Length: 134
Length: 395
Image 1 (spheres, chains in turn yellow, brown):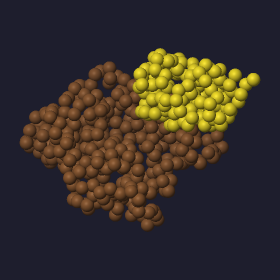
Image 2 (cartoon, helix red, strand yellow):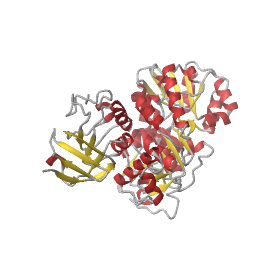
Image 3 (cartoon, one colour):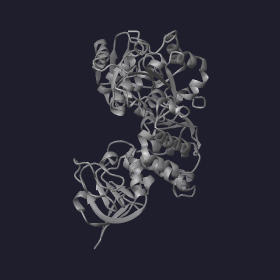
Image 4 (cartoon, chains in turn yellow, blue):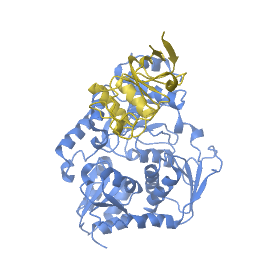
């Protein structure tokens, strides 16, 4: 049985993937290597993990506004996440996801940290404003 | 957020892929910040221009866009003088990337002048209550505070989106109720020249992103307010400030506000401490720079008279916009007769040119805040007169 949770559309699109979760905010400039999609900041919860092709769940972005361009670079390199779920999106990640055409949804009706876990198969349909847990 | 039929059509992609993404950026920001509509703007200034700042990721994005800006749009300083980059020893590989960036912006109809002082340019005049979408922190501060126009602090993509759509989401500093002072700063002593940069440096650290209302003993010039705001936007995140009896909003009877509940007193000794701590770096200045933000005509004239009959004994760089330089060629010639270099389109902070020096003397609170972290060298602080004395060995 699948579960559907509604949220707020930030970047429109639809994509599926396996959940990768962190409670740490992400600064795309500095925390993520654009060539590999790996988290390279030793202080980050996801240090050493790749975000490539995942449904990446994190609270929000932080750091330099150049982070938007880094997201675009990840997309061009094929190392970007398939979709993003934020608790509450901020402008750096919002802009990065829009220019990179990565579906992004935030403010889910149910706390994603309560219902999702690493490896869950999820469809993010931000065009229509929901996620579907398979 | 309410969208017009025309805006809805753009959002559906009927006006092309670039404009669809651009309006999606504006709508997303509007949703995040609670805007109820898009608002027409008079001009845009796009930051994120230096290759040193945006790198290959930025080039790729800008090069992929198609379209023409709907309002006059100009760029923030680039990483080098676009006509004369060899003179400051810029790497040809860096220059090639920088030229690629400026051409990509140019193909979108953006004016290729690169300056942090767009309010000096013809075609970019700013009137009281104009709505703008500007990206350079000191230009945002100057237009909001000194000119009484209205702009949020835009990132590179959001200002570019606003330029291509001709609109910005109506939130933040576009609304009168968000422009009221909420922090009082009392500085009851005589101030002039670079005192304002030092005052801004101290004040910015104290107030963060709040809206200060200054009560000053002296009445600052526009150039002095430029230095005050630039420093506060660098040591803090101040996008708007008021000065009692001076700046346009607080002298407008229709602009009502209450006395801020938070208040601090800044004393002369706090300003002197900036000069003193700055001069305690233990490293001799091997370069002196002026022009953060870019020099006005008046500042260039003052420099020219201070430098008259003198010769520099170390690197002395003066930054201004190309348009102001072209309008003041004789003044520039007089300055350069001393051996000083007048450089356009760039600055000491966003250019890699200064990275090989050890210690830079500046007269700007903003440069003083950024040079150590952005360029990796020490910075010392002094008045324009002291900078000229240091550069000419007249100590």
